[in-house]
Image (cartoon, rainbow, N blue to C red; front, side, top):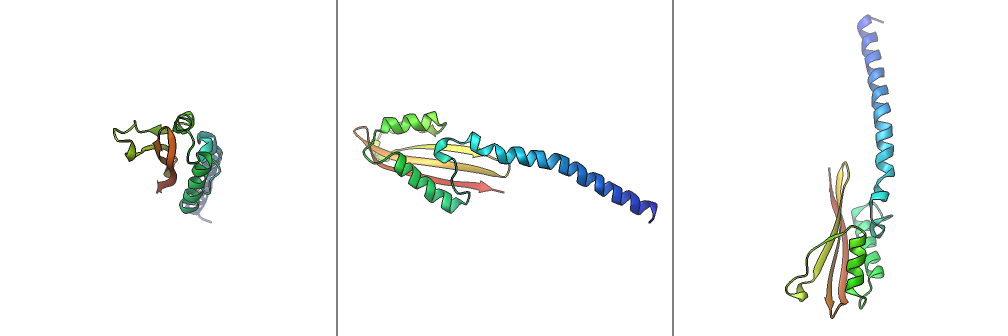
Length: 133
C-alpha cells in the first residue's frame, strides 16, 4: 500500500466519522421535534399528502360539526397557533385559517375554511399540503 492510498483511506475514514457524529444527532433532533411543534389538530396524520389531506379534512369535520359555534372554531384555531383572515365584508365569502410549519426539506400547510350563518357553521373544510425539495 502506498503512502497516497493510505492518506486517502484515512481521509475517507475521518470524513465518514465526522459526518456520522454530526448527522446522527441532527437527524435525531429533527425527527423528535416535529410533533411537539404541531398543534393537536395536525398531529399524527399520515405523512403522505393525499392520505394526510383526507385525514385532516375528516378531523376538521368531526371536530367542528355543522351547526356548531363559529366562535368556538375561531378560539380553538387561535389557541393552536393558526393564523386567520379578518372577517370579510361579505359573510357569504367565508373565512380561512392556516398553520404553516417549515421543516428542513419541506414547508407544510394546513388550511381550514368555513362559512357561518348567525354565528353557526354552515360549512367547514380542512386541507393539507406542502412543498418539498
